Image (cartoon, rainbow, N blue to C red; front, side, top):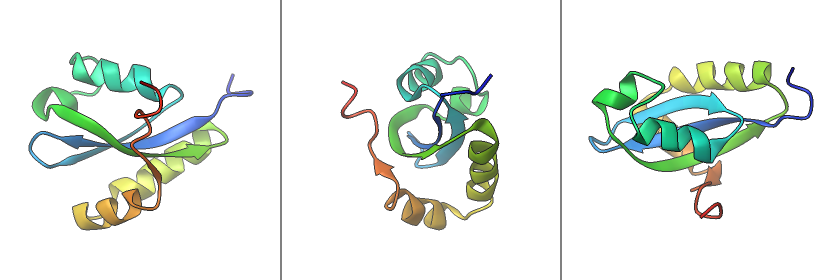
Length: 94
């Protein structure tokens, strides 16, 4: 199942300034899906601009727990947290 996969919690900055939080094993593919309007319905309403930050987790359970914790934060707290995470994780993937 999850053996050997690194799961990521990620934050996407949207065109209206809002932030979206999700989990994935492939940051580039997930961001591409969001940009194409596939996946989360929220991304169809709030166009994704950039992958703001990401954080690695050893398994899906840990990533899901972190996602839940982050989603409960205020937008300002999410941005502060993003400053401590892996910045612009897709910049090196280009």
